[in-house]
Image (cartoon, rainbow, N blue to C red; front, side):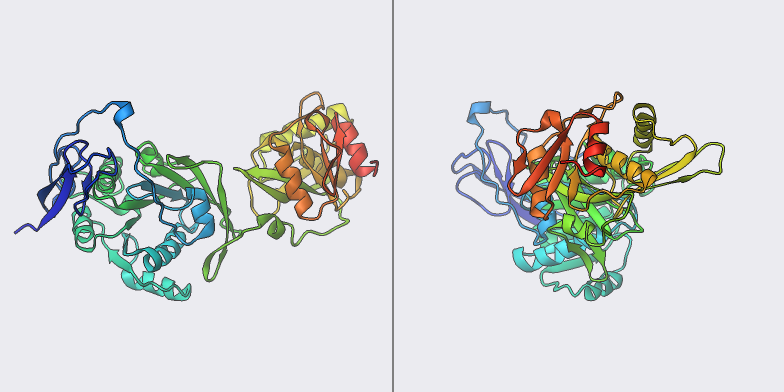
Length: 462
């Protein structure tokens, strides 16, 4: 016999609550909640709008925009500072969150850490794994020394069984790792197919909105962005996060590309260690910790990751080439951008790079996509070519145009403040974006062309 469950539904807007409340948190109407007994264990496709576990709820009623009430959003902090930063302060109840990334990048480790802390602080959390057994998850939790009070584990891929456990435990947060392994019995396609991924995500979204359960979906995505990955779900969910990084380096970046409840300009930085992902509150200090001073081919750039300024070291190596076509190798910067910069240096400054190999690397495995790193890359290349070190107390910011001119960059003040905070005494920036010659203890040098910037940086002019 099917289990039954009682929910309370607002007759005005269709909002459901597990317990009776006097005032609807959505439409602010009073005494509109009515008792509704629903059958558990359902979840079949084709149920009416607003259904939960297969039970039909009353049809929704349209409201005037002016009559729509705003419920106070109380976020649930995850206890992982960098994770909470990207989410905007924590998880919003009833939200659907998608966490994507390449296999092996650390997604399961991150959500397990957050689930353990959240279960201990905020109530029951259900962690569903379709790829690992509960014993494997337990071993990882012990290795990371996690206190797992309030955390329930379930090794299951059948969505009906998952829904039944959600009904029994009634968690505040449900984590499904991964969505590609889940399947609905009444959908005639293999687990991981586009149809299954979409249908399972749609039912979990219905669960989140009607049962007020926050759902976190973990999804794999390859470098080519395969269609069976989480990209087909981005339009369905409330928040889309991507965990990025080089698998051969320990640093990981958590980015938000969609967030209906907060900003998409925040980035979280982690260090993958034996005890899990460790937060890096000051990543610039970490990225520059092993930098050698007085070495040719090294330059410090202030880049922006979302709204966070980061100081990173850009290295270049210029050597004689034995090949007919000299190599241009870029790690962490756009290879096409490197080709453009070497062409500008050869054409505008007469730098002899036609018969030389040029290698550029961003230390730490970071990837810089913004053009504000152009001047730092150019300075590192020229420094290596001429064997003239860039001063160790100089931070460099600027975009280079095809005519060799320096163009202003966004958020210059924030970049300069970060450089000053880390002890840099000088900064080289485009003259067009310069408003002051000094920011606190930081002396700012302005240049209009890449030639002037090279003179200021390498010749020591100030």
